[in-house]
Length: 174
Image (tube, rainbow, N blue to C red; front, side, top):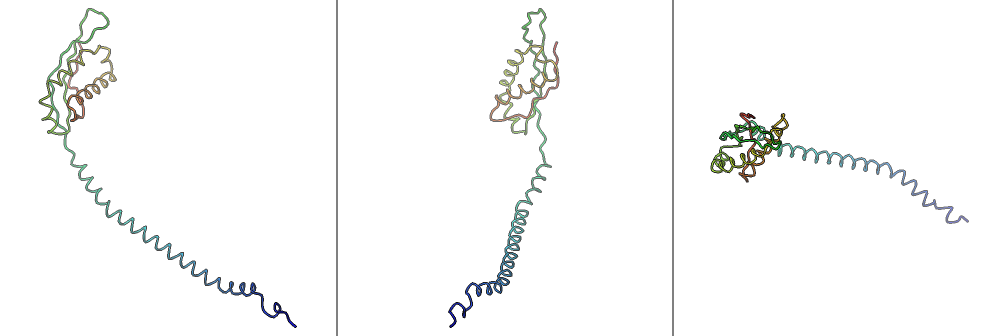
């Protein structure tokens, strides 16, 4: 008599036989799914890139046009300033500083707002310049520090408005 195990094929053998036959279609489905997912991802990325270009691409042209239309600065002549310099060395000789200054402002509106406070600016200039020593003005570094300090003081005096720079027309130390 044959035992039950001998007459019926083993279930593991059947599963292995079916797995070999079923493995080929499963691989095709998996690779087809993979291809569809990759194509779908590329379509989405392409759509996002195209949308970005269409949305942000036009702004570059507008920015370039705005950059080409730069407004020229406005210059305000300040009255000449003549002060005697601080003499900390105890020498007998008094030295004088004569400065002609121009303020560079961004537009005409700021210029109109600076005119009423011109006495305050002149007071600020004279107060600061009288405390300078002749050695403070030595070399280009000294003039650069003077320019930056005057710009800072003018901006503090006319706040919230701002100037672009203090420009020297003439500097004479006698």
